[in-house]
Amino acid sequence: MKKNLFIVLITLMTGTSTFAQTQTINKLMAPIGSATQPFLFSVNTFTAEAPFLSVSSSGNLAERTSGAFGYDGVDQQLALKGYLGNRFTLYANADLGFSRTGSVNSAQQAEVIRDVVGGKNFYGARFGVGLGANRDFSNTAAMFSRVTAAFEAPKWRIGGNLKFEKAFGKYRDGIDLITSAGYQHKIAGAFFAGIEAVGEDLEGFWEADEAEGGAKLLVGPSLNYAPLYSKFSFSLCGGPVFYATHSTAFSSEAIRDVGTTGTQNGYSIRAMVAFNLH
Image (cartoon, rainbow, N blue to C red; front, top):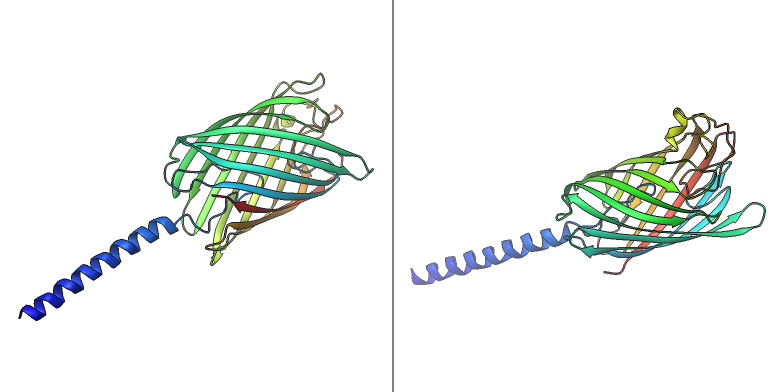
């Protein structure tokens, strides 16, 4: 009898310990394998549960339009992104643009975003507000504010941004409006696929002389792969650029994700590899 009772107690203790360890592992493993930047045209925030610190390298190829911090040609970007604590996320990047004419220019941008709703747990909804500054390829400085929204689940994710930018240039708009949204669903393992859409200079719908050439839209497939146990993650997105309106003003070299010039539709393709330093 005593022997049987001892066996039962040992079994219960072992089972309890295993269950506790499993719960701890599951809690810790939940964010692992998730991308530090799942969408290429929307900036996401980090959380206390997944306090990433990452560096990323991305390239953009565009025709009859401009890529991120770029123009018609090839753009190379290096970015640093990290969790600062208290629901703050830092995002900074620098770009080199190689035009089709052979010239090379640079641009820089930095911003800090704070989640005002959510932001403590990796899964679930969160909303953030941020401030930042940049210098584009034409050496024009700008200040901007960004509103972020995201919902993370084990099998799907959605995210988007609303960006208001004030450029300090003589021939620039008073305020530029840029929107982006993306959705991805788990296909297999750590592979997600979905769609992204970007709308830029949307004031072109009601301003005939919009300074950046008019309202532009991009819609295309979005892919992300963040292997479990790996510090690397990979993203790819691209698609056609539709010029929804055409401005009567000459376009500038403002920092835009999908373009600022041209009178024809074009395309933009972007790929990124990120490494988590945390």
